[in-house]
Image (cartoon, rainbow, N blue to C red; front, side, top):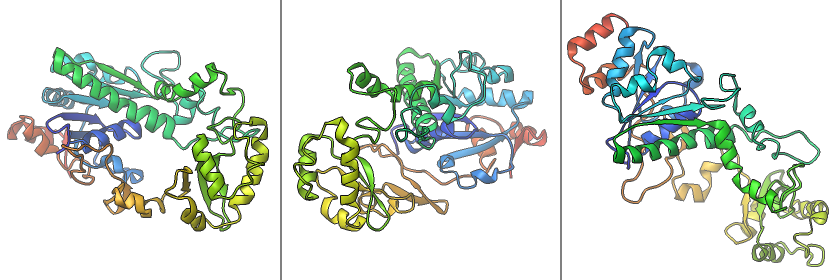
Length: 379
């Protein structure tokens, strides 16, 4: 089992980064119990990889019986994750202070866009809004064009879900020493800002033009760090930043040494991109793969989501897996002694209600009463 085997996480159902965090914790071996609102299944979540490895309990938290049942479950838990707007769980009577009365060691993970405090904390938003306020969105895209949203990877997933996981793990480590839990305030805004750390350093050193996009070394401005179309209409990705890697690219691609010699002459980058585009357009993606892939030229073919799982390197590493009838990323990172694994596929809403409550100390009669009152629902 994974490194979190023996830890119990309660996840209040939601979408996006909080469930992603729960998925990662489940992959690492934690027992993750997803508290659902209803037996009805959202069709958009029918094939949601974030549900894997989790047990499902449908509990009416708006009722006193449901609230008390959850607080009793908290007594046996190590972590609770919620993704509501600030103050909502407090109004429901299941906020941090309520939970700590039942389990002072509980780590209370909160996932929001804007954070628990601040003038925007109660406003609605999405990934694109959060990264807009950090400079991350401004920096993405081509020169002279509108910013290009980098999917919802920067705010929701990298700046959100992964930030919550790292915060929860740190708080768990601290709780082992102190015997006390704490709130982990994970905001996508903060996470996206963290992800921009390198560029603040570059800007401070005069190495980054923060006023423009598509003109810098890592935003597609440099000819040696960009994507190019091939003869068959596909694309390749080039990242030959270092001099020795650039020299190998020049050798392998038979680039004109006089034309391409001034690697870091920024005023020449637009012209060199035009010339390099002609070079890559002269061969198919497969032909370039044969010539450059696996070398230190820092080259890779640009693959679609459906092509990526078929690449030999991804196959060799088992980077993807098939579960619940569709391809999805396998657990990461990897552990040498306590490997992560997907314990099972998605469970239907409410499928584990009675089983989970029984394991947490609820008697048969108590479970029956919750079922009769429709507080606990099972399919």
